[in-house]
Image (tube, rainbow, N blue to C red; front, side, top):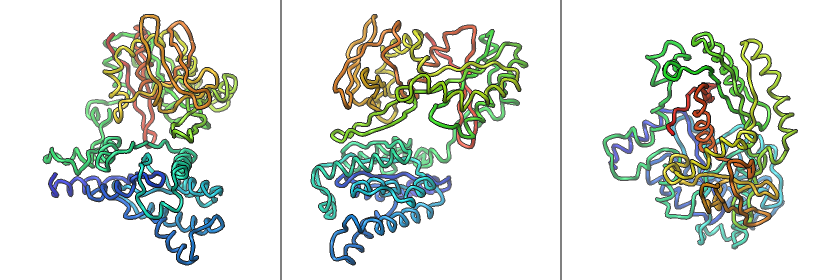
Length: 479
């Protein structure tokens, strides 16, 4: 790729909103080599990890390595440096050599809890993506020797990862590889092309500017063709002639809903009212309560595999019902009354237990090799979580969950539990066990294919986006 094209790509990305991506990991993770490769590729990146220079300064002042009692002053200075680096970035993309929540891991390693300043900074200054580098087998910096003897490397890495989970992030893990291949993986995950790659020198818009300058949505594509939002449904209504339209809106049941969630829910009721008037058909709202949201995530300290427990498995059916009643019932009742629109509530637990859903899931397994890259574009590993029948925990990323057998009677899977080891489960369309906890894209695929088989009902899927925008679409699949 020519220097001119690279310059144009970086400049195009620089005109967009700020995007901040963290590269982190324990000692001896290859982070320095990757950061150098990011710089060589011409991607904006933090020059150096401030913690190292601050550590050296404190070490020189004290005449020794820092002890537990020295950590607070050191940590506050490091946190201030990361905040300054964060706030100085105003436009475009930028990679960071560690991030503010790294402090959780390092404090825990020295037996300390997070400071109020660290917790406040982690809430206020949020990154767009976190990339955790899995450990390598070699030391990359002389200072690593201070704390990085075999088991300590793993312990530090584990605590840093747990710190990001505690701060509300879902890290992306980058396997050991060359720095160039790791950068390729990160760029692919962000839907960017590595600007250091050769080829396609004509279209820099396909490089770093992709996410910031090429927004594709129904609004931008259909802006000149629509007079009203409801008209996006008219072709399907004219074609299918449904007797009923259901507007489906799903929400994770993991706490009080924010404003954007309520905006999308209110829009569903309003659109149902308008559709009833425009198309002279019955309409309703179907509220999908996603009680498979992660309630808790832990790391296996030996293998670094993440395990999660869903809200349903942690709280049980009765407490899930209480959450729905407490957070949503009164709001939905008022919307129903204001729009004269009925609604139904369906939990994901009930949905996945239905024979139609499970039959559609089993049918999709026949084509798993064809669809897996569409469902997991970065790595091709489809997250099929089948919780341990003894404790209800499952591998978060389904790394070791394998399809062992598939025939007309169902599917057999093997998986690994943190506490109970390897286990096997069998999925049968007529049995509501085991629990099928599917990743979002896979869950939506099965849900929409199942909905598409109700020939007299048109299901309209609704989703919220940034700035409380709302998107509608309807399932349209063949058999």
